[in-house]
Image: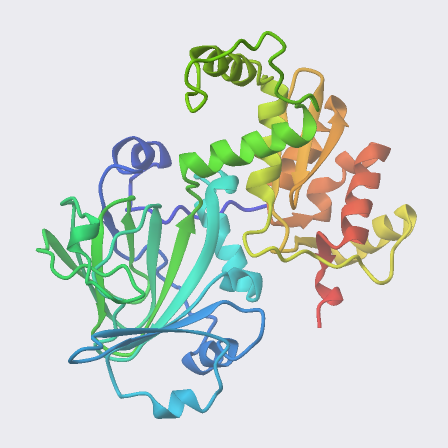
Length: 392
């Protein structure tokens, strides 16, 4: 497959970007996608906001006591005829799940590990539309898809005390911009976590935000402990057969704390547990959506014949793929489920996890291994892969 161009300034390598900018400082990328044509129109975005199961938000800036107002979809279509001419923004999460052209856009960001990519959000704003100055705790690439937008940023630290009180949004009451850029169609701005940013539409505007997963450390620890509790912990309960009479029954004794410390220290953490847990948790769907099995399951022979006829196989965007190579096995994670495979399947597993679109000619030598064919066929029948003619 022809490699997708890097959306970086001319002459900048992925290695340079990662070393000098990733999670360090903002970067303006003029003409990152010079021939980019937005696959969504404002009317289509409004239509998506009216659909059940699609996460949408409307942020309306007002004067007076209700400076900012947040509403969650799905919306009745009549609301859009009632909106003012300016100062509002409509946001749709995970649009890459519904628009194949946007899913393919993610191929240009493969210099970042796939498991780190979260989703593509689209925001539509009329003139002066904004979501206010705010801070995100994750990396984001902001691609201008329609119109022009002015972005102001600051690397100053912000605290909860800087937020506008009594609203449902994390908007700063004030910030002083250090840099200011005007983005046109095809331009893109990279922002690391913690950078204050404020985008204002200079005209009717669409922005595509490529966001990255950055789970909180506390959430990771809680998730791992829950996994161990289910998979590894002993069913035994707290015991104290050597309990002695205490002078103060209301006191938690040093001996009790020591016993609890021994239980905590006995938590069986090993590399295999860590790998199995992490691969499953980062490939789970954020929204909880899962694919439906193919209503017309194919035999292995029928699948190979169709693959060769149709040439291209696609990954369902509801299914996240990742893998971990071990000494004698490959761990394949698909939509939060682990499959342990032989090392002979390494090339096939890497190809599955690296790419969203699979070409039959690239797979031809790999299909000489029966286990590879069986794996592809199973994933197709389960709904994680599909042919273009399956849609609709």
